[in-house]
Image 1 (cartoon, rainbow, N blue to C red):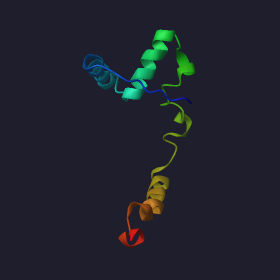
Image 2: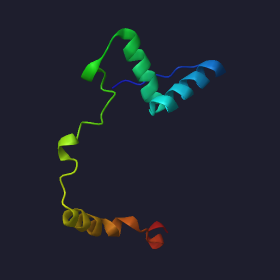
Image 3: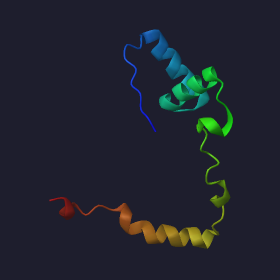
Length: 86
């Protein structure tokens, strides 16, 4: 996937993009991509902006005891041993 940098965004455009971003509850990057897709008539899955359903088939599948077991198995990764960083 390509990246693009846009220079010289004036304050009015910057403010409007940020307002729209907050309104749509999207990142600034996704907001700009959405605007571009809309302006070129790219819609549906082709624009790949909405990834919220990518893993829908896996959501809510764990039983509570399975989730507890997973949380317990990950506890070791939630602490930092400062000696490792010396």
